[in-house]
Amino acid sequence: MKKTLAFVLTFIMLLILAVPALGAEKQGSDIPNIYLQGQGEYIYLPDGTPLFEGGDLPDGFLSEAVQGCMPYFKDAIKNDDEESWAAYREKFMEYFRPVFCKYALDKNGVASDNSDIRWQGWKSQPNTDEVRASKFSDGTYRFRSFNFYQDWRRDPIENAGRLNTYIENVKIATGSAKVNLIGRCEGANVILAYLAEYGYGSTNCVELYVQSANGVDLENALFANNMEFDGAALRRFKETNDLYEDMTNGLDQTIVELIDAALEMTSDTMLLDAGLAGIQALAPKIYKELIVYVLRESYGTMPGIWSLVGPDYYQDARKGVFSGYEEEYARLLEKLDNYDAKVRQRLVEIIDGAVAAGVKVANFPKYGDFQVQPICDTNNEIGDNSVSLKFASFGATTAKYGSTLSDKYIANAKKNGTDKYISPDKMVDASTVPASIRDTTWFIYGSEHRQFPDIIHNFMFKFLKADGNLTVFNDESAPQYMVYSGSERDHTDTIVPMKEENAATLDSGNIVFKNVNWKDMFMRFFKTVLNFLKALLAKRSAA
Image (cartoon, rainbow, N blue to C red; front, top):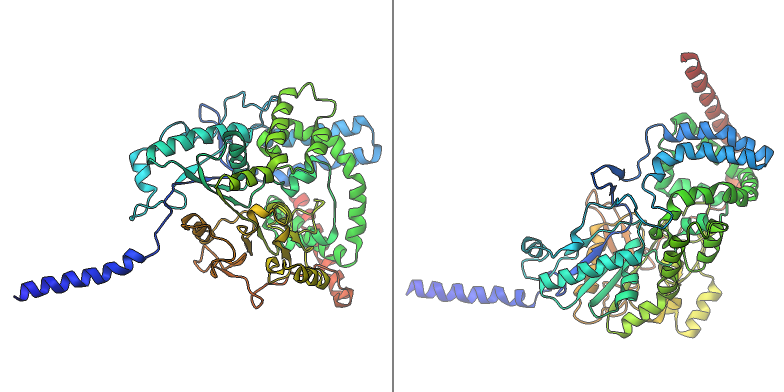
């Protein structure tokens, strides 16, 4: 009797415990997810010789290159003749070619040396172990069920062909009729090229994450000769962008300290703007005499990099880089123009078509206190330090860096009934995003372009797991504006809804002369100069 009672009680307890489990949120998505990486995959020759392994510069490269090129640059500026510019170009390329041109494509935009990434998994079906690893214990799929890696140099339409093969292989291996596609940075370009080329039939959901199909600020500036130099932007870049540290990493510490001190003094005295005005005047000349030559031997041969040039910049960039060289680069230009016509100029049309075909589409742009490279014509725009938010969001209206939307603008939005799309920090208005994705665009504040923390992936996973169509208005835990903070490395990062009380206010970056301590500033600067000269003399004495 006791055993029977124990059995009954145990059975009842199991039923009680099972009830919440039956109603619990599923672990993953019902459809397999394919995650497309952006740039950065290593490039190798067929024999395994590395051509690109992350872009780290050789020790001392920057210092040596700057010192070696400077006399030639001075002569080119002083003489302003073809001979001096040619000498400067050749000296520059002596340093540039061995490091940056070895993984360039040929003049047809083809890897004629058969270089590629090592991953070739797109050619075959995932095996049983890979399919098993793609799932949670309840049989649903993980966020990154399968990963598609791309040779980021190649034509996105070519990579879309590889993706199409991989999608069909995943469908066969999993038995699923459709897949979800998640595209990060340049991976989004490949997804949009895939949709343009192969249609919507195999796609259930699309997530675009810090997408670059609508243009990347640096590529727009360099390729299309839209460089603009701004003192406040340069100072902000130093203070907010970790790329500044990367750029100065190869320089002697004394030189870095001198640059930092010079930036502080010239910025606070407005001398920086005067100096940059001189550089601005030289920019068209530098573009014509150096940059286009460099691009034609390196990144300008790569259709994948060209896909980062925005719709409004492409024609100027094409003309600037290839004027007089159209015949020599004819096959490459065919690829570039084909992508432009089929994808770049049709971005919103492709997205609208997907939504109309029943594909759920979401976009996840980021922004924060991050300064884009201070040579861009968008250097006063907010963004994620690589892509301005107006590009990444496909058209959100944004305040300039360090400011907010005006009271008049917000009043008009309230009058028009669109104020629900304005961010709590009053920096963004999503009402101007294309209607098809306006309610499925989530803005993430506080995470820069090159950060891809798992906690943001988990947030994005909500959209893929939702049985219905999740929008910014039907889940209180996932409104249109979210704030990321903390450190993934320290396991302290969080992502929470943006509210007025936690909405950050960016520093305006404006120079306030009344707060400048002139004596201290000049003393710091001259102390740094003296230390630099002392170190320089010590090196020469040692030699």
